[in-house]
Image (cartoon, rainbow, N blue to C red; front, side):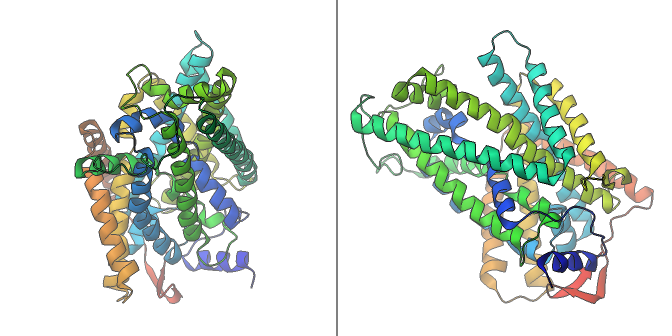
Length: 468
């Protein structure tokens, strides 16, 4: 039996029909995850992280890798058991209880809706920097229109766009490595020399610094989980989504660490960037090492990577989550309708409408939206770790205590710590969102749409009765 046929049979065992187009290979999933996490993400926040971590930016991302690998392993375990498009909605709903699944899906929906908004707002701010006097909202709407068109054209268009943008980003990563190496070897920037101090400076590393770095690092890696939303479009065998998540996490961590190590060396041992330098610190270093032309080129690539590539991936993930929740009657049924190109048409359009509204509301308010954007993901991750333990150890009586016991417990402690220490506006906004979710849930129950994922004993899947 071919991998595609096997995947479709598995999906049918959960009581669903194959509606989305199965054309996404494991490599495509990996590329999608890299685009979602943005290989050049440190460029925009380098100065902020440098100041927060006493110059040890690579250490921040190394801590982030260690922290997030537990969540990636938890995702991989649940993706293996439930290869469905709903991400934590499916995993928590089937691993613990459908009601908790609804709130996990509702929580991460906040993250998935706000991520594109944040990206568009950031890209619009950057475009105004390139074209002074232009309107932010116009640029934001241009990016929204481009990404909506590509999403509506289907998964094949998304795959092609992802490949093109990944090549561009990786080319510029290589260019930066070359620029930095030449500048360091040639003494172009005073004080820039080869050193391991940015990775670990003896006497500077302490508990508070690591705790601060943990919060920054965990949030920097958000996005790998979006791979799970394409599970029903995968052609790969044996948990392709789970493997792609873990591989993508390690690849992007290596890229983050390499780039920030070299950028930290170019900083020449300075204590911190000033308030007027911190926002464009990375690009200022590129200018010092290679000239204004390269600085502008890096800036444009960063804007396109964020405003188009990253936001496009986020919009695809959000539409798949809406599709999955609608299919299980937790959101309006129309959102699960599929177009002739085998994409969730109305889910994509709803994401577009909501994003436009949010962009127009938040344009020019980067700080506010940044404080709200991560609550949903962190809350959903916490429930995910509980689901891994409950599903495998409690329900399945698994004796794999490392993957099903130690990993989710450590992951829960790490993510829980970051969530508890999140900004107050993020907590308030997140709790308001959950309260709205409780109202939606109550309306569903009143209308007879209580979430039910019944176990079908006649079709076992991954060691247990399949669920509908």
